[in-house]
Image 1 (tube, helix red, strand yellow):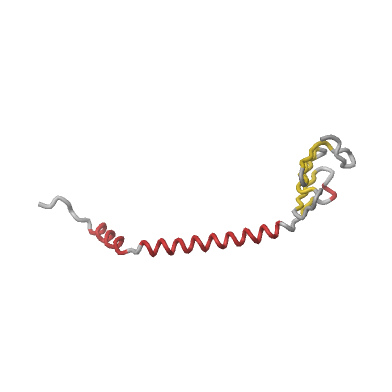
Image 2 (image 1 turned 90 degrees about the horizontal axis):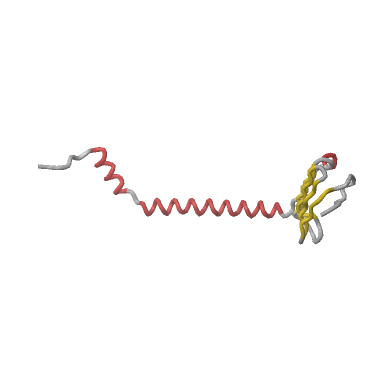
Length: 111
C-alpha cells in the first residue's frame, strides 16, 4: 500500500529546481550588485566634485523678504550657508554660527 501520491507538476518543479546552478546565479547576482555599486560610487564622486564649486544665492530683488546663500568655494571668514526670512537671520561661517535680527540695511543687530 502506497501512502503518498505523486503530483506531476510538483515532481517536475522539483526536478527543475535540482538542475539549477545556484552558485552561478549567486555569482551573476553579485557581479550585477558590485557593478551597480561602482556606478553609484562614481556618480557620487562626480557630484561631490561639482558641489565643491557651487555658489548659490538669491537674486537681489528677493533679499528684502527672503535670502539664501550656499557657498562651497568659501575661504576663511566667508559665509558658507546663510538663511534669512524677513529680518530673522542665521548663518554658518567658518568656525562659527551667527543668528539674530537684521536692521533695514541688512546689518545684524543682535546675536
